[in-house]
Image (cartoon, rainbow, N blue to C red; front, side, top):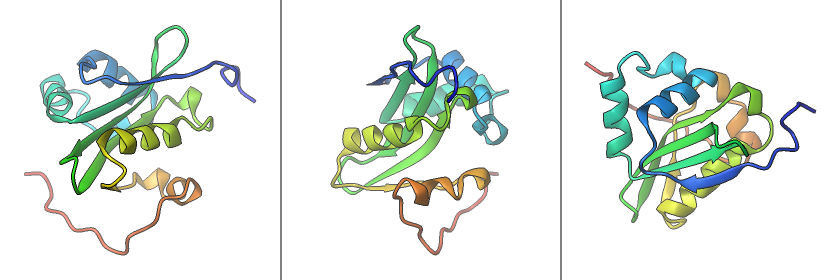
Length: 140
């Protein structure tokens, strides 16, 4: 059991999350490896164009987890970013962020995400189903 295991976590939809807080949380998770944390203008656009941002904060108000989604609120929700501070992992925060993101965008939507390489075993563990194919055009 880690030192944070007894701390209650507060979840909220925060569409006004600051770029600084988001980048800081990304750096404390493993997601910064795959996000443009050295480009605050890109991060700002990512935040402002998202329709659903669910946060997890410790009792001191420090951001310890975030889920950022793009949705049409009718058919699909793409959960683009799921980051949990490494010191707070293995407490169900990621699972709760996913659930609250899905609820905020509508449980009637299909929630879709692409797994980070290190998280491929995590998602089946919390009940997500795998899809056999995903296709993309790389950034240019």
